[in-house]
Structure formats: C-alpha cells, structure tokens
Length: 244
Length: 244
DNA sequence: GCAATAGTGTCTATAAGACACTATCTT
DNA sequence: AAGATAGTGTCTTATAGACACTATTGC
View (cartoon, chains in turn purple, red, orange, green):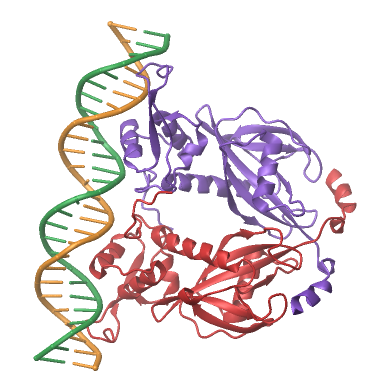
C-alpha cells in the first residue's frame, strides 16, 4: 500500500517545531462566590506570575487526559468534576519559548480543599474571579472565555449540579446560579422552575438536618437528574435585548 | 531579566515533534439542501479519500488566518463568510504521520460557485451532507460536531443570514433553517417570529422583482440586522423533552 | 418573640404553535 | 383559471416573572 511506503520516508522533524499545551479553567463555588484555580509559576517564563494550571501534552496522551492530569496534580482526585473543551489559543508569540498552541479546558468542581502546589508551581490557590488581576500569557482572555461559557452553559444544561455535592438543596443550586451569573434570583420562582424541568433534579425524599444558619425550614434534598439539556431552559434574567 | 537568559538556552527541538493543522467544516445551502465542502486527497496518507479541507498551520500564521487560507484555496474569496472555531482533535494516532492536533473551524457561506481543487487536493466539491459517506481520518466526527454546532447556533444567533446573500427574503431565510434543521417550518409563524426579534433583520423597503417560481406575491427584501444574539431565540420545533 | 428562609399559590405579560384567511403572483 | 405563495389575524397553550402568603426554623 502506498501509505506505508510514504510513512516510512516521513520525517516529522523536517518541519518547524511547535508545542501543544493544555490549560484548565477550573471553577468552583466557595462562600457563595465563584473561584478559579490559579497557580503561581515556579519557573521561567514569567516566574512568579499567576496563571491557569496547565502544561505540555505528553506523547501518546489524549487531550482530555492531559487536562485531567493537570487538574489532579493541583487538586487531588477529581470525582464528580465536569471537564469539557473550551477552545484553542495559538496566536504566534503568545508564548515566548516557541510556537505553542494551547487547548483550553473548562472544569466545574464542587467545593474542594485548598490545592497543593504542583510539580512546577510555586503556589496554587482558589482565587475569587472578581479578584483576579494580571495573569501570565493570554490566560486572562482564556479565563474570560471560560466564564462566559460557564454562564451560558448554566442556561441550557444541568451543569450547575456539577458545582454541588452529590446531594444538594434547591437553595444551594440557586446559590450556584447566583454566583456564576453574578446576580440574585427570585427564590420562589427559581424553585418552581427547577422542579418544572424534566430530569434536572431528582427528589431524594429527605431534608437536611438543619435549616439555614439564619433560620427557616429544613430544605429538601435532591440529586442530579438524568437530563443532559434543560427544556425549557433557565434563561438569565435581565437579558436586555442585547444588540451589537 | 531571568526570562531572557532562560529563553536563550531553550531548545524547542528537544521535545517530541507534534504538528498543528486546521480543518474546515464549510457549510452552504444549495438547492435547498445543506452541503459541505470536501476535497479528495491528492497524496498520502489516505490518497483518494474524501476529507475536510485543511492543512498544516504555517509558521507565524494565526489559527483563524490558517483556516481562512485553506478555505480560500478551494473557494476563492470569502466575503460574507462566517468563520468560528469549532474545537480541537488530538487523539494520538488520528494521523498516521505523527502526533497531529487539528484545530477545526466552522464556516457558513452563501451559495458559492463550484470549488477549484487546491494545491494538494485531487478534487473539491460541495457535497450534500446527507450523502457524505466515509471521510479520511476522524473527519466524520468533526463534521458531525460541526453540524450539531450549526443547528444550535441557528437557534440563538442570527447566523442563518450568513448563508444568504446581502439581500434576502424571509422565505429564503426560512429555507436556510429548514435545510440546517432538516425539517419544515410553518411559513406564517416563522415570518412573524423573525420580524419580532429585535435586530435580526432590517427591512429594505423593497420587494423582489418576481414572485416565487411557482407563483405568489413578491417577497419583501431584508438585510442582516445588528443583533449578535437572538432574544427571544428561535428554538427548534419538536424539541422533545430530551433526556439522556 | 423575631427574623429569615423553604416552598406554594396566583395573577399577568409574553411567547409559541395551530389554524384561518386575503392578496398577489406564475404558469 | 388554477394553484402556490407572502404575509397577517386570531385563538390556545406554555412559560417567565411579580407578588403574596404560610409554615418552619435558628437565634
């Protein structure tokens, strides 16, 4: 076959070198606020700068696998973590070392313990997204894209449950929406709406042991349902007829 | 500064070679049916197989620029063509030559003339998506992802207008939706709905010179409005409460 | 007791879809 | 003349949001 002959004479090193990295925008909710996982770069380039966790893709390692590895290196196990591809960033010069195309991933995690610094990170921490300032490379742009994707995904998918533990209450789910969308929602209407979407949540027939810290009845417990899309969707409120 | 010192000693060729390609899922409407641009591979590997147009990203070439170049090589100028990133595909072994990560782009184009074969393609053609069979590499998967993205995008963005010429009628716009979604829509309801979305289309105050080929009044002409998102969205009908 | 909260009821405005209808055009 | 099409009117149903209200809990 012609292919075999061709491949035998093919030299991959005859072309200009490029590199593939993965970067992860890992989001979680802490104290009712949206946080992103950041690492402080341990080595050059841009040592000391905050950046998204990430690194070079290894040989024979699939892209989602590389993203999961980078995430576990910082956070430990990633049970119940949602991981999806966000997009790729490959503008020439975005990394001073060489031509680097980074495949960015977006992760939604329930509340996790403080991260440990990975192999080549001086430090790692969950940082409130409202307080992130400068980031290395083009990571600010990647983070912004990830946040917008997250906000949109909550509208038409049940992925808000990925920010919760296995068992959660409707008010807890509402806190997720409020943190990601950055605005308060009407408790009563939200409650009814969530229950009206088939397959969004599943009633466990139990309540929490205690009411909220400031009083009120014990909330009923739910777990994630089997829906992959929300019908009807939970659209963001104050959606002003956005025009260009 | 430490970075400069580090970069001076950095050897990009010390790592395993990988390559970056772009592949384009270019869609258009012909004879009321959705078509995708395919090329017949001129050289190995998989010579003679139909594939998505694409190729290696050149040094100092940005990713969208590479996608636009691949598209113009086959179709000529791409005025009024919408181009967006679809996703990246990098499973080891997807290309027999070496580790290749392909950044896929999705393009919406108005009806264009038959393509010319590009530099390394034996042939190129607009093929009805319903009639595509086998494709090289993992391009069938990429095409499927592109189609689903296109179907979803028509719901909440005005990108259906990217399939039309600068001036179009509501029935022509409806034909786009019907071709992409693969189902007929109610003409009256569709008409009213499109006009009710602020910024979707702009009335040009004229009609076509002739009615439809089978009779009927002359349709009014519109051009794309300035909205970037549709509020309210045009949801696909027969949206059965999809559950996993 | 007081204040906050979980959850439900109700009403209104908007939107989606079914159906009907008129006017206009091609063949 | 016949048949198809552009565009509008109207009615029904589903949904989103505003508001009110009760019951339950923590402090």
